[in-house]
Image (cartoon, rainbow over all chains, first blue to last red; front, side, top):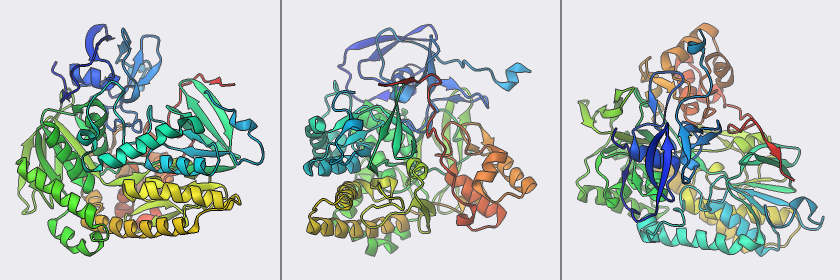
Length: 102
Length: 467
């Protein structure tokens, strides 16, 4: 899976390792979670209302399209959360949907 | 939070809360500090600067000129000013005000919540991108224009390896030019506004000759970078797949010919819309602004709202851009000081007012040159998603209008859920109102205004009281 975002500089930063759905993801100190995840893969989550993959939209905390969660279940807005060493992120939903309940 | 407890400030010093630390909030706080007041500055951002002068993280090294181009000096001045204020204000970064009631703002930072009393509240809440849906805009790889700029400015990333910029407005050219200059591949700039509109708007645009000249230089830089620029286009669809996201954009050019451009990202925006949920919760009156076809909180020329003690500045009040935000932030602070009985420099207020009149004229020119394409709403095909949050299609919204007879946005929201998702109508609200107006045969202002609801953004379920 190719990265969606392209780095255009600031490559000399210290490396940070995080885990996304159990996979190691290489990030740089100062990256947001969104930037780390989208330099590694092409989406952040799946929509709970249609089949589309989502990769965020506004990057300024207004649209809430970039929600992911920690293994402990805390919801994070990927666009405004800086990466931290050894962060463990899940992209799956915690909540059920009506379609899954029937 | 460090610093003084704002609730215990003496009665002689008014408790002033400034919301936002962009150009308006910074100049506002600076003016209050100069007058001997210690304001609380609440900002959602992690660092000051707002969106337009957004700061990169501390360990990034790009110089101001690379980040902000012709506006580098202004950006640096805003940042330095705010840094110099830090010991004279109570600064609450990464903090959301989620409600306002009874002269208190209710804040949340992480999972800590707090209520702050105020004697004066100055809202410098800024703006977000104004969007018109297009078929396929829910696909991964579609970003708002402002979002694409944030990726570059604050994270040194392009949102894709081949980016199409689509929409209209000055920001369209600015962000495309910034991408090209930073080494990103700009597949094309697709402007829905015809070129003749720019010529017709010249008399108004000449109110700010320097800004007009900078706009021309930006456009020239795109031609030098061999970026194809199309004027007067009609978006047809963002194409791609649910799994892998954006693969192409199709559009009709000004001659009516349908073209398709391969790309893996689209940055889209039609100028800006004010973030004015807090003004609404503070019970400020709104008025419909006919030229931009959106609702703005009512404010006098100095930024006094219809509610005593509530002041409005920056793009959240009127979309005048960063220079207007600086001027209106300072002016609103002076108005608040004047109302509290302090002596203020009336000639300074006059000069700020004159500046804002010129900027208002320029903004009208921009609006004439790059109009919101209201007519597109009626032409949206039924299977276009209008609400990205909950994947509600235009056809479902139209069916709701037809079955319920509703012609008002809040009632239509209750029936259709358009405007009820995670973004709370920020990105579908303008278009939904246009669809209601065109389908329902009512004037856009009769379709009304989506009411803000607390919390203005989603909150964590468990909050602890911050003592």
